[in-house]
Image (tube, rainbow, N blue to C red; front, side, top):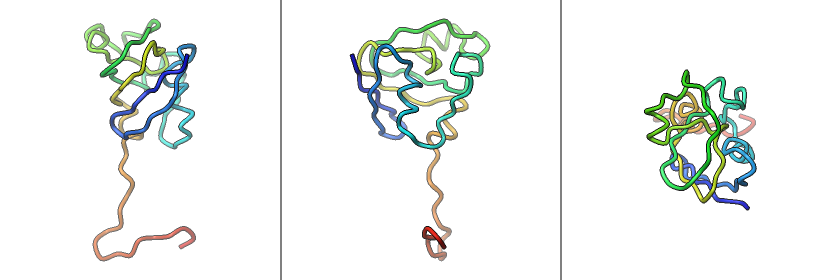
Amino acid sequence: MNYEVLIEDTGERYACSETESVLEGMVRLGRRGIPLGCRGGGCGVCKVQITAGEYRSRVMSRQHVSAAEQAADCVLACRVHPLSDLSLRVIGKMEKTVCRVPSAPLPGMPERTQGA
């Protein structure tokens, strides 16, 4: 069964099956900035906080997710699978790239166009 996952920071939504990790579904968005790391919980770059919904999680390294963080639904996206629609916030190392605001031109400078 497919569920909808909402990335609150960007407003993006994507489908994610209960047989795949939240990170695997996120990768299908095809956007730059989603760090993939090891995909097995060893690097800790895909930390998110689940703010709504049900999920099942696999074992996570305490080096990257403390027991207190996990109790507050802070998990590694590569180690959780949705059991319902989910909402999440990006935290940790991934926040810097996923939530990056596109650069704007400096005041008084014309916008660059492709090929300029």
